[in-house]
Structures are given as C-alpha cells and as structure tokens.
Image 1 (cartoon, rainbow, N blue to C red):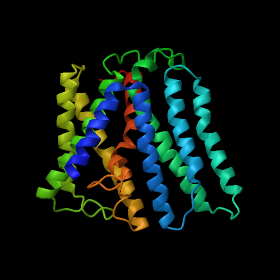
Image 2: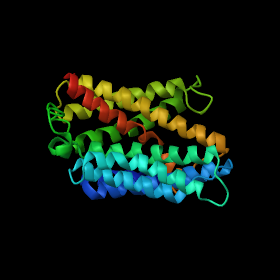
Image 3: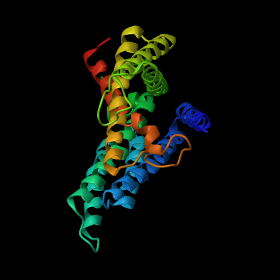
Length: 287
C-alpha cells in the first residue's frame, strides 16, 4: 500500500509539473489545502483554535495571485498586498468570535498563512520562471543571464533532488545509521543525512548535465546540498509540531504515508530558497 500510494503521488507530481500553468496552480492549491487542514487539526490537539476557514481561503488567494502576478495579469503591488491584508482579516475574524482568541490562536493562524500559503507560492514562481523573464513586473536586467534556468527544468530538478535526498537518507540511515541527528526525530541519523546529501548531489549533477547547463557539476553540487538541507529542515519542523501535538502522523489521508503534510514537509521551505538563490546567481553572475 505504501508503494502504491507513493507511486500515485509521484505520478501526480510529474503530471502537474509537466503541464504547468493552471494545472500546476490547482495542484499546489490542493496539496496545501489538505496540509493546512492537518496542521490546524494538530494545533487543536494542543488546545489552540486557529481561524481555519479564513486562513484556508487566504492561502489559496496567495497562490492564485502569485500566478497572476508572474504572468503580468495583476501588478506586483497587488499580489504583495494579499499577505498583510489576509493577516488583518484573520486577526479580525478571531476578534469577532464569541469567545476571544488567545495569542496562540493568532500566532498559529498567521504561521499557517506563511507556512502553507506564502512559502508554497514560490513553487509557482519557480515553475513560471520563463514568464517572469517577460513580465513587466520583473523588467530590467533581472534574469538576463538565466536562459538555461527554464521553469520546468528548475522545478523538475528541485523535486527530483528532494526525492533522491529522502530516498538516500532513508536507505543509508536504515543500513548504516548509528549517530542520532536530532532529539526531535530520533530516527534520523548523521549517516542518513550524509547519504541524503550524497544522493541529492549525484542527482543534481546528472540532470544539470543532461540539461546542458553551464558549470553543470558545480551547480549540481551546490543545488544538491542546498535542497537536501532545506528538505531536512522542513522535515524536522513538521516532526517538532507532531511531537508537540503527541501525534505520530499529521493525518491518515495517504495510506502508508500518513497525512499530506507528512509527504510535503520537505517541499515547503525549498522553493523560496532556490528562487532567491537563482536571483543571486543572476545578480552577481555566479557560475
């Protein structure tokens, strides 16, 4: 069952990444929607009552507005305004409840907005890099030297690096793992971390070479390390939240895999860092 569920998830991911456009936007929206439900359910186990519906709606609006922004349909200022306006709406909703909200209710709701709204929206920016080159919102010299970094290639490589890092850390950690990496997740080991980084680097080198990127080996190594470490951070953050809620899994949506958040935790922090890394590479003409 675990293998079948994993295969279905992988095929779904490959399809939406390949199709791009609104298919990709809808895919990201669905994943984050279910993950946010699980996050708030975990919070409720600790006595927190977040503004679930308002935050869910706001997260979807952030993702949709990001797509419209990078395609030049709406101005960048309008898209940037969604986050602060959503934060105000969430706080106002909690203020109007019969029973006044607590600091923890506000903090969890705003965190959910950032964690599963703003951060996943960077997957849209990665996938739409080609349109960013042309958009009036990003005119000038920005992206001028990044012809090789097409949205599809960057998004596909980033996803493959996360998958290879997860597989490498699991297999190496299970076979050779002895030194615990963190008290937050006792099952993770230093040996597993090394195995995950190594597999991620190897995958990075293979695909940057296949795509004929300049300095492919250096970029493959750099991106491999970066993505593997960010995937680990995402995994540990979710483990920390589950530990606080005294839960083994974030949910039971995916047979053999737990909840949606269990599956996408490694994908949450990664896209924003990759996106800004690409901007820095372009700005300073690195590689």
